[in-house]
Length: 162
Image (cartoon, rainbow, N blue to C red; front, side, top):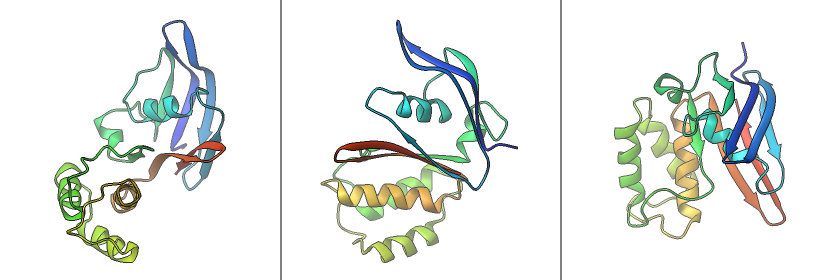
């Protein structure tokens, strides 16, 4: 069974198509990169997979199921912009994720933060630390699908790891 599957997936915003008839199958254990210019639908696809948007037509399946609270337990979305308040310390961020995600592993988070050299009492204001904290959350929540948007100078891509 595919971990992520799109069947004739279409998403329109008004009269503009962000995705049109997408057919995509990703098997478990695969790493897939979606490359394209701004506005080509990469982030829209990720938001559809997370249930943050609904398709105009067609379907998207996560482990054989439509995006739902059940599939959110196996999908981690790491946006390219930090969604956490700048005033939160790294320790408060770990507490927040532990409260929010039933499968969050605090011990694994602490190990990862130590490897990354993050000060638990420092804030992640400024971007770099918050990105590392967000990435740490995705790696310690035991989700088999990690969806992230990665932007680099002169290129834009989306990483889908399953």
